[in-house]
Amino acid sequence: MDKKTALDLYRVMRRIRDFEERSSALFAEGKVWGTIHSYAGEEAIAVGVCAHLRDDDWITSTHRGHGHCIAKGADLGRMYAELLGRETGYCRGRGGSMHIADTSKGNLGANGIVGGGIPIATGAALTAKQLGTDQVAVSFFGDGAANQGGFHESANLAALWKLPVVYVCEVNQYAESLPVEREFPIKDISKRAEGYGIPGVRVNGLDVREVYKAAGELIARARRGEGPSFLVAEAYRHEGHYYGDPRKYQTKEQIEGWKTKFDPIAEARRWIVDAKLATAAELDAIDADAIEEAKRAVAFAESSPLASPIDLPGDVYAS
Amino acid sequence: MRAASGLSRTGTQGRPKPAERIRQTPISELGIVGAAVGAALTGLRPIVELMYVDFSGLAMDQLVNQAAQNRFMFGGQARVPMVMRTQGGSGRGNAAQHSKSLEAWFAHVAGLKVVMPATPADAKGLLTASIRDDDPVIFLEHKLLYRTKGEVPTGEHVVPLGSADVKRAGKDLTIVSWSREVLFALDAAKQLGSEGIEAEVVDLRTLVPLDKDAVLSSVRKTHRLLVVHEAIKRAGFGAEIASLVAEEAFDDLDAPPRRLAGLETPIPYAQHLEKTVVPQVDDIVRVAKELVA
Image (spheres, each protein chain N blue to C red):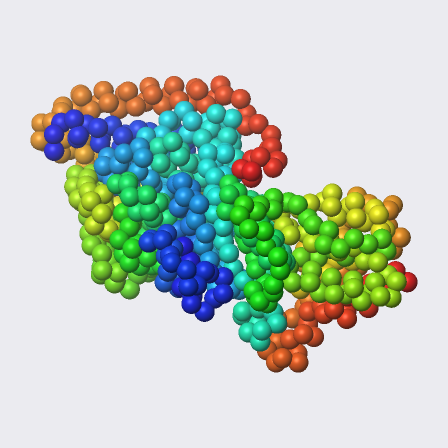
């Protein structure tokens, strides 16, 4: 991997991690309402995949969607503004963390329903097929969603119609609180692709290089009109299901030890320095830039006006 | 897109189909409705057909949590111009899982529009308007209306959503109805007319958006309201109409609003039983007479 690609990937991962740490802090300060779900630990997946997408490609995301949103090019200020219920937020305070969308960048939204985005991404791919474009849709979802009917119905439909969609399953080891070994009767979820006659690829989701390489091949394949595929990336969710989750389903070792043991950003620092693509000091400078950018974004959000009152019927109906 | 169904009567059998524009699908209601949502979000105007409204439960997440709410949740960034066509209603011996009238489910969801034509001309005009509409539309066709005949304007014919139609003028009571029960109400009105009672029949045509003015102005003229629908009475859309009139035209009423609607039961199979659970013409005549007495 060349230096520019490596540092670009690292930079976006760092921006995501900082966003998650900072939004948790804002939550702790009582500034964020409702609930948020941290993507920390899974950054390599969104970043490795979205690096291959154009602004006119589409993604669907999940309740744990901050990372996908950032990787698809969202403005951090508008994301923070949404969490803080401001008019300048992506959803003007109507959606919040679980519904952030950025249609200008092809992000068709986070989704509060597990697996809810999978049929939608499939429909976006249908648009590309109907219009004869080379756009691609990617649906991110967790291991929990791989057991929803919508995944299976969509995979079958996409395979049947050869739609340009890549299903990306982020195995973060828990369906909310249920450990992955109690969710599946099989060890390798990617084998499910065989049932639909599409490629299934399993990668180490802690290594952004692996994700980047596999996703690049599958996305290029979809763009060439060769149909859908299923990418399974194994990672570890550093935080609980949601901010404040008591995490009674995990051991102390998992909660305290695993976030350093399974950390895609520490991993990236290691191989980038080892391969002499950059020095630790250069990476530290990227980290410092990410912090400065985030501070400006939070300041923008905090100085923005509160979301305007609900306007009916216009907020709900387009016509 | 259409659900796979040579069995269904809602298609255009026998006509050449443009390649790829009409897709027969596997029986995957959630998947195909969700695909329609995604296609609509990204620039198409899909029409997705389910064979029966009773199957919509399989697709409800995509209709209710996704299509209906995307625009709102995303702060206005999205629009979802899709139509879900399906058939509802009883009268053909299809029993409980293929005969329901579920319009109240959809009318209760902010973000959906609900359209229910009663005549061939309205079916054309409302479907055209629904396809052109920028919001998700649930287009409910009563299965026994597919065989009805009527004049249909040729060429461009659009019936705007949210415009009720006075199908028969009268001065003694207002019968508000929709879908197949409109035809029953018109038959009943004819009988009532022969007995000197002039019923005005207001066909809502769309439940959402609702033409409140048409309902209220009719009631202000006749001073009596009877709402008739096939769906079960409990929490049915008739309650919405009766409440609307009670709230906004109470002083104009000479009698309490009445509702005549389906019994609180699944639709039975046997031919002699099926009719007993949904309002028939004679039932409408009887209740109308009670109302004007």
